[in-house]
Image (cartoon, rainbow, N blue to C red; front, side):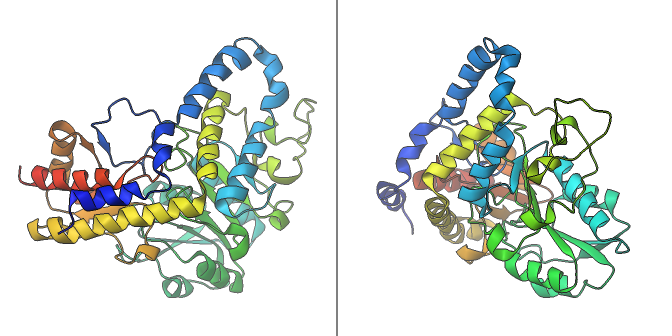
Length: 399
């Protein structure tokens, strides 16, 4: 049996262990296992927010727009080059994930006239499906395995000359399964379609190679593993060679070529900035930038290595302690095939989550009908946290 001392030994050798001190943790006794929904606040973000509120807003007032206007692109470049495998000028912080999904899906359909079909899968995040259903002339839904997620062969079976866009999540929101970005992108391109990836559960936790895989479009949020804060600005990615031909449907002054000219005619800005819309929420941008900087400093390879260690420990403890009391594993067993969270299933999952929060000082995440998601964030979660969380799940399951 894996002991708590075994977990402590893993922590003693953890090269990212010191990053825990970079986060505000007012209650050290709380085991937070929901970093895949909302990350903890980096101390840097809180410091930057205070300075931005008092100095940039309070003292600089409207004059601060002299440098604020560059933040969405500059932060997008940092995120893209350090954590998403993109090139400079391909990532922009803007709006929210659903809004960005709408913008890019609409632009993709317009760029493929006469091809009304959008392909997604049955395990994709419901909000993504709502947006896609709203813009597609016709939807095709791949019936994906609930644990392994959509497979390239299943996607290939849906492709023909009527398909304009394939839109999937890189990491499944419920099971954590990682989709094969390179294979799916290649298949879609062979069929003449574009691909739009949702990176919300992937950004900041798994290595992503947008440029290397030839990905066309992507969106994602910054409030999960990137620790940007509740409702933090989302991001979008458009490959360089597609930017000029893509026309996003929500024209706003921040996407104008000369935003301060206030002309009657709309002229789209060159490059990635044409996908901006309205005035960005600058205090939220400041917090998101601090979270992204913290992750970039740690390095995505180190983050991924620790994440795999944490989730491997979770699976090991699942086998030893949760499977014998009626839980089922809802996540791929192979570490390379899963993202940053592990899902376990139980008929009483909702009640168990309630007891964990109310009585056992553990914050997990419930997804109906029977899934408990456990998302240990590598920058502030320890192996001992994982061991203690499982120990308390056993206690919560007993009633």
